[in-house]
Image (cartoon, rainbow, N blue to C red):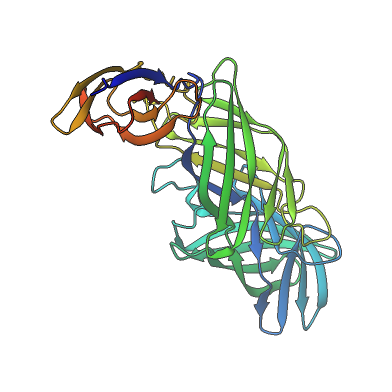
Length: 366
């Protein structure tokens, strides 16, 4: 009987230590403008607009928690009166869930019959505004009753105005990096899931405060009807009181492409990332990426069994090992016969006895 010659070798697939996997955070985008539908009263209507020539329903807001807009008030007795809401206070800032955001702009939070005040002017007079706000928790749609009390003509009536908090939520997939974080958003409007926004956004880490401060690069997102929304660069910061959360402005050149002029431009994007591979309290979104070391080259031993061969692999548990074989070293085409993840170190694998006189094996670990 001719002797059987057996050769085995170990090989390792080495991956770059700078190879980082993609991760997913949660994103919420909300507009600092409210969208008002036409208000009504007995025999009259009220339309808000921030652009000329048409009503876009926008009440834009300021950092002092007030809103402003132009309006067109129709009253059967006085006709159509153009004017300006100089300011109207929004409900007082509250943060019941403690996430650092004003509940008024968070659909999950609601408010009931909250009264605020304001001031308006028209081409013929001016007066006070009383606003009564309400919105159920979990609904983007609320009601604002605006009362105009004119300094000259007295009470002009209560106008019941449906309004909408514009909010989008969804996943933000990102690849962490040492200096730059590349991400993609896939967002749907709360209460109108057919309205979507998606596209890339790239963040550059601050040189002096890379864990807490990032600046997004200008970019372009696409809505559900393939209209493009371009945005500039803004600063994003991590909230010390809510350390998994990052937030910053998104300033669109035009937040509603369906209107004739730019409007609905100022938004806030929050990124909530609970991934923390290093368990150091810094989310992976801004943390230094974990270095992935390649597995050690496995050590192999081969022993005959009664009807088989036993290949023993000593290597790193949790890594995949591919067992390959070839009948002649003159050939370069190795065939993978088995792929397994090591669950023990060492781990024995049964191989069939070769039918040919010579057989060569190698193991690739990765």
